[in-house]
Structure formats: C-alpha cells, structure tokens
Amino acid sequence: MKSLAIQLLFAHTPQARGRGERINGSFQGRLVAELRRAGIKTAAAATDYLNRVFIPKYATRFGTKPRNPDSAFRRPPPGTDLSAVLCAHHRRNVENDNTVSLHGIRYQLLPSRRTVRLAATDVDVQERFDGTVHIFHPRAGEVPHRRLTAQPRAVPTNQSMPYDVSALQRV
Image (cartoon, rainbow, N blue to C red):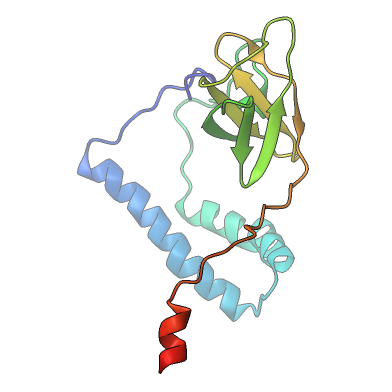
C-alpha cells in the first residue's frame, strides 16, 4: 500500500464495522440463494447474472448517492510498475552457490556489473501474474537469473536396513 501511496482508514466505530459485516452477510446469504433459484451452475453464468441482474437490483435498493460526485480513484504515482507491486512477493535467502529456491524450483543468480556474489543475503522473489519470476536485491536492484533444471537426487549405494536382518533370520 505504501508503494501505491494508499492510506488505510480504519473503521473504529461499531456502526462502521456493522455496515461492512451487513453487506458481506447480504452477499453470502442473498446472492447464493438467488444464484440457486436462477439455476446457475457455472462461473460464466454467475458473472452474467451479477452484471445483468443482481448488481443493478442491489444498487437500486441499497445504493446512495455520494456526497462528492468526483471519482475517488487516483492514478498510481509516476514511475510505479503495477506488475511489480501487484504480485506475490517472497523473501528468500541466497544460498552459498548463488541460488534461491521457490516452490521447489531453483534459480541461479547470474553475475553482472553490480552483483558478483550475493550469497547469504536476502532477495525479493516476485511471481507476476503473467507467470514470470523476477528477483530483486535491496541494493543491486533486479538480478539476472536463470531457472535450473531439476537434478536427480543421489541414491546411497550402501543403504543400511532400518532393522536387524540377523535377528529376523534367528526367529
């Protein structure tokens, strides 16, 4: 929220909290019942019903005119990359081999003019909505990387038995 210059306003009064709870209760109770009555079973049909029937009817019944007719929406601050803000952020520690892991996939951090070795430092791994992964270091900025292919795990050759075989043979 800080990167988008959004200030959070808290509802400290019971009345304000009640309004939010009432509208959620309306949607959870009334909307589900109306979708069942209309025989809607798919997400596409539900979206169509919401836009065509439910929202206009709900707005007519419960809607109020705003005191200020101007839009409350603002443009993001200049230079803000919304895809970098509106994504999943994961804090990861760089391993000694200059790699980080995310969801079982390892990424090799490549050396650049600004970064040669980042081992034992924290980075921000961003999963964007388009499926791409971006890695950022606090001082170095975006770090070039490549996805490593899965390497087969080593199988021990002289695996010890979890029980005493000779004891079983005596029985």
